[in-house]
Length: 181
Image (cartoon, rainbow, N blue to C red):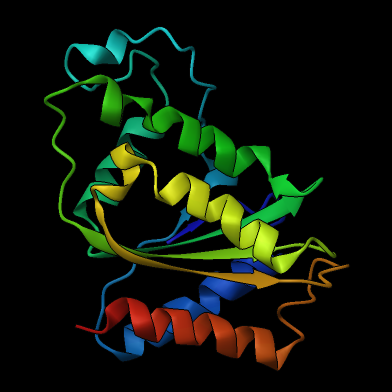
């Protein structure tokens, strides 16, 4: 599970915690990556990764990518700022350049991907389409068996999701789906 919430204990964290508890009930082992605790530089677009799929930047990205490849499923949470996924998650997505720049790159097991987006009032279908645009890119989609996106609106404070039982239940449902065979 990946949360790019910049606020510890914020909306994305609350949704990830609900999902984590659900998959652990099903017997799954869970690792949570808090992007705010990682050093992840912006992609330089240098294509040095073209040779072997390894980014030349010495930061936490390659370890996160290894965890992504080893996972059976992924659930990621990201806030929406100005009608777009916040920079913390987009920076991580942009760094996936190495997965398509290197023609012999090994992508790991195919998996389900769940996405949680938190916002104050963005259009739900537009935000789902935003995720669809990323997850259907050939370089990304070749590692995915299926994906689902939930958009949580009216998140005007950092604890809206924690205080909204319906939101926590929606997060648990995605978690149940992620661990189904």
